[in-house]
Length: 217
Ligand SMILES: [Mg+2]
Image 1 (tube, rainbow, N blue to C red):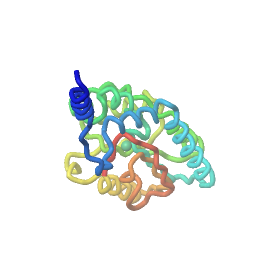
Image 2 (cartoon, rainbow, N blue to C red; image 1 turned 45 degrees about the horizontal axis):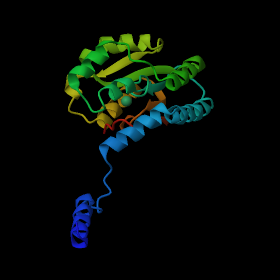
Image 3 (cartoon, rainbow, N blue to C red; image 1 turned 180 degrees about the vertical axis):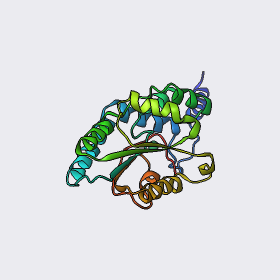
C-alpha cells in the first residue's frame, strides 16, 4: 500500500470509530437509575437513612404524652412492610397478577426500623391503626401478614373500598384520618413512605419513611 492508500485507510477507520450522538439531553437512563437505587439499598445506605429517621421520630414521640385516644396512623407498603425484594425481583415496575400473588402469600417482611418505632409507640401507650391503599379483597391476607411480620397490636386495619377507588391517594388517606378523628381519636402521628400519606388534615407528627422505588400521588 502506498502512502495515499494508507492515509485513505486511516480516514476510513477514523470515520468508523466516530460516535454520532446528541449531547443536549440530561435525561437519566433508567438502567443507570435502577443500578444506583439497587446499590443504595444493598450497600446499607438505605438502612442508615431509615434508622436516622426512626431515631428522630422516637425522640419526637418521646415528648408526647399518650392519652386514652392518642393514635398513630401507619401506612403499610414500604412503611410497615417491605416489598423491596419483590420489586427488585421483577426489575421494578408493576405487574398486577404477580403483585396479588405476593400479597396473598401474607409473608411480606417488616421493615425493621419501622417495627422498632411501632414497638416503642405501643409500649408508650399509643394506639395504632393501619390505613392502606390495598383493596377490600386484600383485607384477610394483609391482616395475616401484619401479624406474621410482628405487628400484633392494633385497633383497626383500614383498606380502600370499591367506592374509594376513584380517590387519589392523598384524598383517600385524608378522608380516613378525618373519619378516625370524628370517631374520637386524636391523631398524634402519621407514618408513611409517600407524601400523599402525610399531607392533608389531622396528621400530627409526620414521619417520612424513605422509598426510592415508586411514587404514589
Ligand atoms: Mg406506602
